[in-house]
Length: 306
Image (cartoon, rainbow, N blue to C red):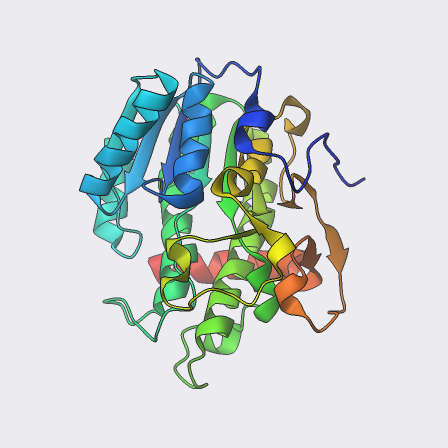
């Protein structure tokens, strides 16, 4: 049965978290220096959680932390360096973490960027959005297990409709590079990660879900320019953070994993596109929840990272 909550397209992160007490929880939010990452971290902090902002730009992260402390009164806000394209940076972050981790929000990302490759020769959108978060989450596995009911949120996108994971040429060594299909593939991969991680880790009390935040005007559009999205479908950053907060904190989602949420509710599964993928925000493509592909991608990713 699909999970429906009392919240919707218009709900804000602050509305979702109102009345919750997270003072016994520890959270990490990647890409928390701006946009929906910042508002997600602010909402968690406002409910009393200890929050670590995992950011590539430490100066921007410090400013974000000061802003959160000022607006919430919660001084238990930390800033840590994390570059999701650098395996050494990820290893340093995960090895320095001690104690339990209750909430991990894999929020950072890039969109429709020009062809770029990591040191390993990996396509950079796949490496940043998916591989880096896979390595981070696996590196924090012990801390998540200690929490006894940890929740991991992966911020995907309706852009997953642009492409499945093309297993025969993930890194565009053969096919011509296209910024949008590369973005779509990375976001499909994130949903598949949620499916397989929940299957593997549910006995340890770790549950992973994917979310579509909505169309938000942010730094994410620095390469693509503003998207041709109908005006009524744009959200504020507070509205964009709401679905992450639903999945990370609502009591009724305890023990739920491997699903895709949009507009604060579990999305409808579709197997046929309407053709207008820029407006297919609240539905999930069948290929993103495919269990066989989720398992295949997990094995391939472990081979890549090893």
